[in-house]
Image (cartoon, rainbow, N blue to C red; front, side, top):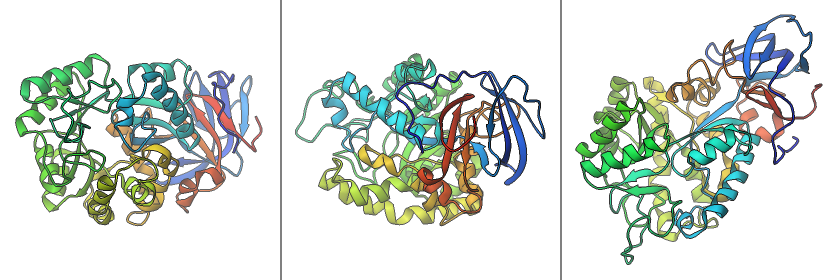
Length: 421
């Protein structure tokens, strides 16, 4: 596949017609042969033998046309698996690394991402204005963490104030209801699309345990209250059933990871219409390569705890009807495995459901139903053209570099190979 250039394509988001493709309806789970007319970045018409007058034409005969992919758990600035590196390096260097990560993410077919700490208003604006090539960004800014929680990267022997050694760390420490309210309001002030809280321990933090719960119920409810007041929502990092269930009862909309959920968790997901964003590929990659890309020995030893139970959790949640959303959560050089999550998901659910998790269901989580994640009239024209049908063989998306013919983002052709333009 042709590599995406470092600058945006000169192709304008004007009048384009994609002809003869097998268009994937991810909601119905079927394909039909049709033309797609794109005007000013949106899909205006889908049908047979559409008027092509004055339009740039893309012949997709024999190809599959599907929505651009959405990864709902990324860290666009995480050039290392050691989050402490984000506090030790200059912001200019970190954002330069982020621009590379963004470009490579788009090349893997992800036209939209939800950043769960790292990206900020500047990166999102630069992408929107065409200064950075990459997926459109829904960001939280800094994640909210208690002292010694998953967003506090200080070692036991370090006594400096959290966040005082660099502005680009993933977390901000806020203890107590008032401090949580203030921190949530500040991220909303800076344009956050959602608020992230650390509701349990994690792998990539130096002083907490995987099985710990973090934040009191009152603190979590404060974050939810502030997000709700601003028409936003809260995502919670949580592994254990105890942490998951506390967060869901507090009104959290999405649980990130959720590997150790239980039957009560599933009941609460359904009761609150909440979303589960499993990130199984990151544990697979951390186990394989984490130490090579900066993960300490102690952090690496935590991985087994969450890796073994992940697939079973996804299977149980899927069978119960929990809304599952695609997330990778990969760090450093392991981000090249982003599409491997499709292969893992397909072990426990049909291919079409794995595809829905990265399209229509992800769009619902982002409050962009009908705009993203579908090939439909009125939707934003984020499209992939593939040489095979991923509903028949999910490895088409898992091995995306072998099958991706073209990426179209907001009606702009950002890369193409082997098709007539």
